[in-house]
Amino acid sequence: MFSYTFHWNQALKALPQMLDGALITLQVALLSMVIGLALALALTACRLSGNRVLGGIAATWVEIARNTPALFQIYMAHFGLGNFGIHLSPYTALLVGIAFNNAGYLAENFRGALKAIPDTQTRAGRSLGMTPVQAFRYIVLPQMLRVAFLPATNQMVWAILMTSLGVTVGMNSDLAGVTQELNARSFRTFEFFALAAVIYYVIAKAVTLAARALASRLFRY
Amino acid sequence: MKTSVLAFGLVAATALTSPAHADKLDDIIGSGTLRCAVVLDFPPMGSRDENNNPIGFDVDYCNDLAKALGVTAEIVETPFPERIPALMSGRVDVGVASTSDTLERAKTVGMTMPYFAFEMAVTSNDKSGIKSFEDMKGKVVGATAGTFEAIALENQVKAWGAGEFRPYQTQADVFLALSQGQIDATVSTSTVAQANVKTGKFPGISVVGKAPFDTDYVALFTNREEYGLINYLNLFINQQVRTGRYTELYEKWVGGEVPELTVNGVYR
Image (tube, rainbow over all chains, first blue to last red):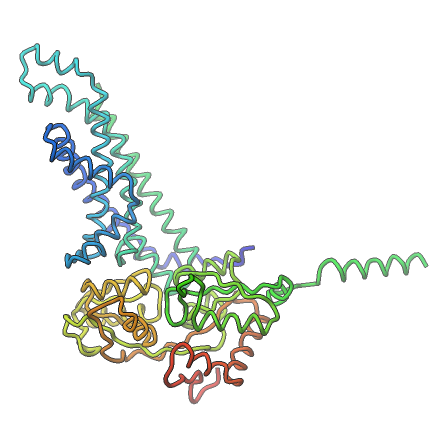
């Protein structure tokens, strides 16, 4: 039983507002990805360093980021830190939460990608007279990025979808926040949520396609 | 002879199989259960006791309604934003969920006459220095997403042109954020404000004054086209007041001066 009359014209009137929200969503996702990539590289370096303290920190980070819900991570960034007097705005808390999550998953991607490249290649490079850094830079890294690229795209899509969790920490400018607000005012739940779903789909699909096009250019050989 | 048997059979069949057009009121009576959408993180209207059983004004109100209908009440917990999806997908029959009867919302669902009325109060963090509604200008304020006061407060922040508004998903989150100092002040119903300050779970906050918003009349709601049920609900609300049950429940859960449910100078 579903008794509801759809009024799309009411929802479409709010489309510009929702598209503004979508821009914020994309902005948060992109920023979280940039920060996440940088952190993931640092975490990977820590793990490779052989230093037990650094390795331990990196391992703990990856464990928590991958094995707890993103909702929890974002909530902790806002209310958890707030308990200790550190006040992050909803925007920052959301960004920190997702970047934390991204870093954990991307570090695992990098680790997997590194494993996929046989040791013998480094050794071959070294026997050609390359320094360890040169061997890493010219032989391992390009291949590693190639292997890690598409999984990283997945993470980007995931980051876009995770931004919708910002509503739990009071975010009202992103797509999910704007949708909630419109819904609360008019109770036209189904139109607004359907519209939001379509917008999320389009953004995610566009990112996937763009990444695929980019990959075919970057990794042609 | 044969025709009359046939005719009798037909009449009997129609009478037994399907009543011509059962409306929602019939469905409720027929099923023997009244399913109410109630918000359970909104004390004293709805919350849970230490055994996790639903309690509160709205819970008692639903039970009274079920008793009047001669059926059993089933409390379905719905956070504020989920009230309407719950109704539209047929998970609940009636919303007893402190729902403000705005004209915008009445385009979507059917509202009864008011069954309760809220005054709005400002609660602030003691460190913020906010002592009145006007002091909130330029500060970070918050409220529960999807409520009357959230909409009013957000409009006010926009009108002031300074400060920031943050909607949180639950009333508990608002008071947590307020207590931590993430937000400087909130506007909530005065009943909720007092109930939350009293719990002692949120240190460092106090109710500092009234918010000059209109009285927030809240209504029961159901599907817009269910006139039979809406008609019954209106009579039920009237009877609750008439029999003194409304006052009784108000004293039990809230206390103080019982709010008027009528508006002077106009019919409903």
